[in-house]
Length: 84
Image 1 (cartoon, helix red, strand yellow):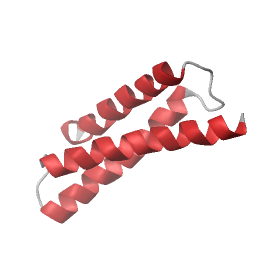
Image 2 (cartoon, rainbow, N blue to C red):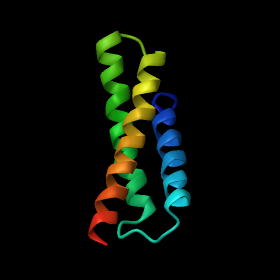
Image 3 (cartoon, one colour):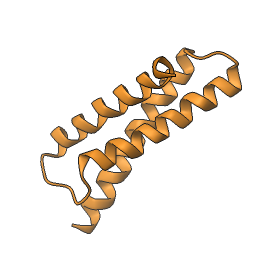
């Protein structure tokens, strides 16, 4: 189970930390919550890829993982950028 979920956790952590570095301002939502939302989205993508393809570790699933994690981080940053 750990080996299955580790890519989602690490990719989401990297993208969340990069988002904090890129915007260089204090967001209204903490990085830990942004990482949590991104990790949950990433885990959902990995489970979806396992269900659809029947195998874990497909490159298309990992591509979708990066895309979803980056989109979640972007959406959270843009939401709080517009408000504050």
